[in-house]
Length: 180
Image (cartoon, rainbow, N blue to C red; front, side):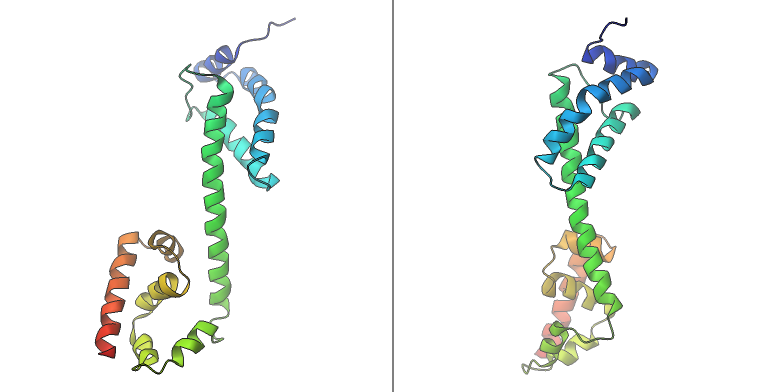
């Protein structure tokens, strides 16, 4: 009959020897608890399962190192909680990306925003907008019409945040000049 090893002994065996049995024992000991806690924070069981797996993968791969300070459950919770936040942020970004791609698929259809902008009587705003380069119009659409932050627009458009700021500034300047 084998003796039950402490959490610290299991983690040392995983880190030093890549001890698969120690890893399996740690997983059996804490995965159900971590899953239950995560499900209290996130209703999406798929995301929770992924986060729990990523948490234990970080332990196995050694990207998360236990410093033998505090209890192992708290350490695993901190790793999992950070990964859950990352996953939820990623899910939000993926959702926005899906919406944008859906809009692009129907690009030949005139959107409600485009109809409103085309009907504006102040100056020749519609003409000024159409004279902007596609890159500048895309930044304006993402930041002004869609209401995305600079960082969100950068992710959506696949460009650095600084480029989003520069293009937005350039677009506003060109619009002011065209409408003056």
